[in-house]
Structure formats: C-alpha cells, structure tokens
Image (cartoon, rainbow, N blue to C red):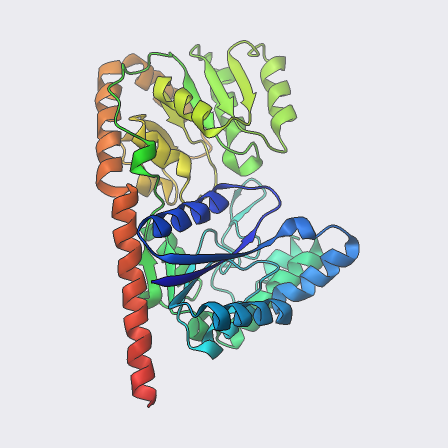
Length: 404
C-alpha cells in the first residue's frame, strides 16, 4: 500500500511527533511505501511570518498546491493527516478530495472542538466551546496563546470549515484514542460513524519483557512537560502538605520548572524532590524499570500519554486521576490506582496506600505488562490501523462506483 502522511510539527517536539514517526516506522516495517510530508513551525519567526501563518491557518493555497503535486507524483492509495495546524491548514483535505484520494485524520488533540486544542482554562477543564458553531468564548478569553487576535483566527477557521462542511465531507475517517475522546468529538459535531478508536503504542522489540524486583529503586516517578495542565504542582503539594517521605524524581522541562523547583526548595524538599530535566529515552526507561510507580497528576482530559503505555510495558503501575481518557486507560485496582483530579490530599493518600502495600503493587505491575501485551503492542496496533485503512478505501471505492 502507498501512503502519504501529512504533519505539521510543533516548535517544541512532543508526543504527537513521536507517534507520527512511530506509525511511519510501523508501516514501513510491514512493507508499505510511505511518504511523510511535513511543515515545521520553526519557519514562523517574524511578525510578518505570524501574520501570514494566521491567514494560512484558515486556508493555505500554497499547502493545497504542494499536496496536490505530491499526490500527482506519488499516487497514494490513502492520505493520513496527523496535524494540519497552522501551516498546512484544512486546505489539504480539498487537495485530496479533488484527486479522489480518501483521507484519515488522527485527532491528537481537541482542536476541532476547542480553538486552544486543550479544553482547559483558569486551572480547570473547560467545555464552553465544544459543540458551538462559533466558539466565541475562546476569543473573549484569548484562549489561544493569550491573544484575542490569534484566538479569533482559530475560531474563524473552525466556524468557516464547519459551515462549508469540511469536517463532514472532506474527511473519510477520524482516529481517536479512547471512548471518552470519541464522546467529546461527537459532542463537538463530528459524525460518530466516521470516528474509529485506536490507541497509541510502543514497539514490542523496544520493550522486551524483563523480570524485575518491584520498586527496587524506592522512588516514584513523573515524566512529562512542566506546565499548568500537567498538575505537577498538585503532586508537590501532596508531598508538602502530607509529609511524604519517598523520593520523587521529576523528568521533563517546561515553563513552570523554576516555579516548581522554588516551591519544593522553599518547603525544604529539595533533597527529596529531584528535578532531572529532559532525559533521553534510554534513561527514562531505566528510571521506569526501577521506580515504584508512575504518577500522572494531570488536571485536564489528556489525549493518550505515551508515558502510560511505556510504563505498562515496563511493568510499572500508574497512579492517574479519575478524569477523561486517563480513567479509561488506567483501570483502578488492575494496572494502577485512581485519585480525584486536582486533590493533593487524595493523591497523597493513594501514594501512602501504594507504599504500604508493595505485594499488591507488585501484582499490579504484572497486570500492567499483561495490559501492554494484549492492547498496546506494535503488532496489535498495525492490525487496527490496517483495518481502518481498508474500510476507508473500500468505502471510497463504493462511493466512486455509485457516481458512475
């Protein structure tokens, strides 16, 4: 099968970019011919670049022409869009439609429901714009990059393409990660019959099964971006307010790193809470193999954090909030524990319980590996992805025959 993948990389690489590369690797490993056509936000440098990108985010004729040329040259059987915002724009759908090539769109975030792409405002989840024809609230609150102007551009894109039927008529299938995400996207107005659920994965070969002693490092672990929605402040509060004594290792960087470090230091926890900054994959995996458990303290819905799948593959239990997709991915008492999102007291209570029940947590770790092997391997994911592709191609052929 010949596949064209379209993706707009962000200025700072994240889990979304890793998923794109992983799927490309997966497809090529199974004998498919794949072209990855990317744009990169690094090209947005000056004020003029920002102005041009803003207009192009609504509809980029340059991106449309570029995709049309690539389709004409490569003749793919299907086009898989991962992220079109802002430089590719929804114009790429028109290029595919004109060429008669079916389109699959992975929804890595909530952009088609929320102009910010993250239903989160003022420290809590927000659904003010979900399902609204005009997401006016996002403009009023300057949700996108704290800018009324830039928020109005994204809101205009959303409204215009909804009115012209882009989301319904130009996309043949959407891929989401969980049932929860599907519910939110249907609430936002996407056709339920076009939405497929396929989780993220990690390569089985990269995570061979290892028999390890539970919690031999005697610490708990956080891996992720240090920003408000990730809830790391809640995790640190759990330590400060409840005198937790097990070491905490925090892997990652972000805009709140200095603030969070100062918070820990001012409370006298600088020796117990260690900020490791960004670490490469091999170091993160070593930390996972030796940790007692992974904590995901996020206070927003999240999509499908790859760190959870990696933890499962490492037989590492996960403490996650009973919120959104995370409550679905992590099963309470099976492969992890739930706590109330944003509640540092409840989080501390669950941490203390886990520390006092090492035998239970060791068994939970074994369940994590079983969860990974049954649901999140590259082999299982490939079969799911090909099933979606084939259904989309078959439906497109059926439509074409009916037009003749």
